[in-house]
Length: 108
Image (cartoon, rainbow, N blue to C red; front, side):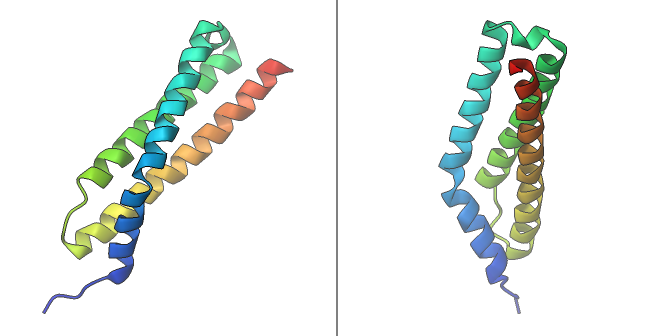
């Protein structure tokens, strides 16, 4: 008998529904990186650190999107996948916040 984890099914379904929002965030991160290089801010100490944080955030977002696209049908694996994706997205939040704080020091 198979045990169905409705929480895992719901988590993966919600992540798939939010996929477009994650793509928009990824596009925004890429645009911000481009602007940092175009404006020359990437070559300042805090700017380069912000770029590093944004590049890591971009990598995590890409990995999260790949995991969403490859979400398994098995409910036990879905739960693991949902947890992994949530960890990646939590890291993205931390990295983006840290990058924005670094960029604020450049504006001061």
